[in-house]
Length: 302
Image 1 (cartoon, one colour):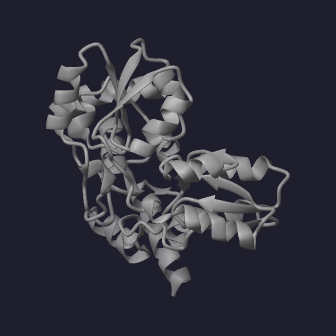
Image 2: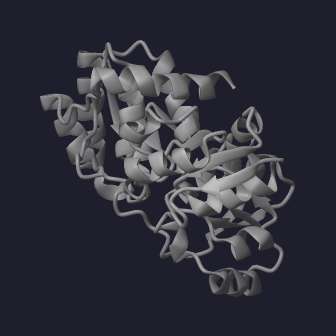
């Protein structure tokens, strides 16, 4: 049945000159049918280089918006319109403008996990893969940063900047499912495994980790490490890619509770329908695109 579905999707892709992009947290079968799998930074870059007429983006809303901003001449589709990132909803325009008013000399760097309506107020955006590099490149000594508090803390530890988080305690609900006790229990079970975590994890987990990185940074680290066992602190979908790319190594999740329901909304059936009916099309207003693209392009240049 799955093989039949794969064949149908591939036929539709060829017919419509379409490409499927999928985030590392997608279901295994969605990753397998995708033309490219990566983290937010890799997907943003890939979206700018494809010559496809249609981009089917298996991710959450802010990612698809970013692809639409970078590809105003293409049709950008999301298979399930309900794939809404909870973190991206946590930063409001009002909070951001209030922070800018309070700290007029501070530049604004927003995590890519924000909606386009907020990106227009940013001097630059960043991803978890490049956040310290982007923030360090800012001219101001203080930087307004949002919406993830844990990433903000990680950035402050790894740059010379004073970080002003906005909102005060924004977070990823999925990464907050991973507790320090999970790490303690996992280390007891796998004492020689390296602990590799995402910077959206809470502080005590970051402090106890052997390596902190974006999802694709985690893949690179595990590929290059001489260690053969790893405890992975992020959404469990990444383990599928890790096991495919490093079949001789062993990977264990710090917590099986770290599941993003929104990322898992996309299915093969929905991808097939998305291609067939060309739904759901994501468009960003031109006035927002014209402003937001400057912050995105600045990140890509850095």
